Amino acid sequence: MHCATGASNTCDNTTSPSPVRFGFLLPRAFDVLDVFGPVEILQALSRQTHLELVLLGRTLEPVTTEPVSNAMNRFNSSFFPTVVPTHTYADNPPIDVLVIPGGAAARSPDLGPEIEYIRKVFPRLQYLITVCTGAGIAAQAGVLDGHRATTNKSAWKTITAMGPNVKWVSPARWVEDGKVWTSSGVTAGMDLTFEFIKQKYDNGTAIAEFAAGNMEHVMITDWRDDLGFGARFNVTPQN
Amino acid sequence: MHCATGASNTCDNTTSPSPVRFGFLLPRAFDVLDVFGPVEILQALSRQTHLELVLLGRTLEPVTTEPVSNAMNRFNSSFFPTVVPTHTYADNPPIDVLVIPGGAAARSPDLGPEIEYIRKVFPRLQYLITVCTGAGIAAQAGVLDGHRATTNKSAWKTITAMGPNVKWVSPARWVEDGKVWTSSGVTAGMDLTFEFIKQKYDNGTAIAEFAAGNMEHVMITDWRDDLGFGARFNVTPQN
Image 1 (tube, one colour):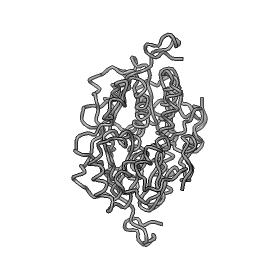
Image 2 (cartoon, chains in turn yellow, purple):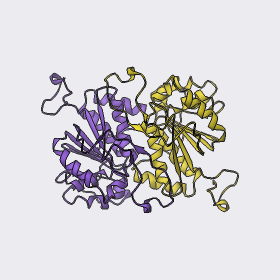
Image 3 (tube, helix red, strand yellow):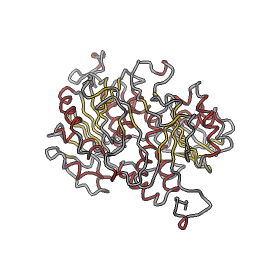
Image 4 (cartoon, one colour):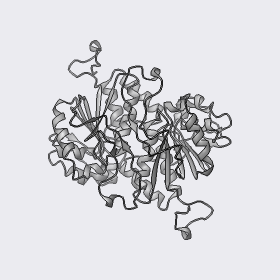
């Protein structure tokens, strides 16, 4: 059991209070579903307990999902929604959890402000969550060093090379290692989020099941069940 | 086979060109994943063919996902991202497909401008897509009348009551009926979108499978496979 704030008589006091403030990092060209899959589920949780969403950008201007490189948009599509941050990295608002999405962002040569922010905030986080290739951004910041972690199986070689001191794990839908939770590609972030709610909130299992039902989503409940993507993308089993 | 624009020698000319312009309706309190699930997948498609995203609001101000009613936010959470429209309903930009999301929006008493816009644009659409309880918004506009359609099984009675002249279908992950495609709850919109790509674009099956692999998503490929949610929510099988 965890400790929900104000519910100390029903919990194991060796663990920390349920997180309230979720910060999402919004680097340019972040993957939209890496962000909005978890946001959807946490929004359902926010109807059962008080939660606060913090969307973090370099400035308060809308952040675009458009890649920096034209080579990643060969057909000149205009299909890049923008999202409005609530805070800047410099604001440095209080957060309990930082969620780092992936996407083309993970391969950007221009992640300096994001990496600086991650390094600064990591020591005071209750939890760090990465989704998909967001693990590559966290790895570049060094905060996954020594931790067990996973990432998108279709991008395995590229992303794991960003963290030579990380204990990369496959097969895995997600991996928990203390305060560090990492998920596989995109939709795996949703299963990670459901598991996080189950473990960290009062009535978490009931809340997760209720939310998943409303979303008509069948939760993957075994972290080792990677739905075959490790094998499909020729990732050697490890850890 | 469909007809990709400019590829008339390889297609069945009884069908129409592949859609280029996708408009997403953004009523207040729309469900974020109803929008960003399909956007994620279409963004992958937009790297293989030219696509344009149109985000439609009443004004160009960011649209909030916050419910109008405080009763829907009992714990005073602040967990409501905003999304920036690219166009207003009054702009009436050219679109080939209109996607209508659900969420608390579907139960809003203040949908006048959305309903007016849907009625106006429907006759010139190639396709109408609804996700989750977005079918309720389309039903209120009358554009589902006479069509086979489905919606979220956990909200079945409320939403189907909005369209007494709609031929509601269950079990169904999604339903295709001519130009009208409707999906079940939230994540079903992603499976609908994959199927839409398979049917409507050159190399659609390969593009869908590639995108699903990158997302580590296992596509539901049988429209009748509702993953048991109809039975779970006591929906009587029909049509």
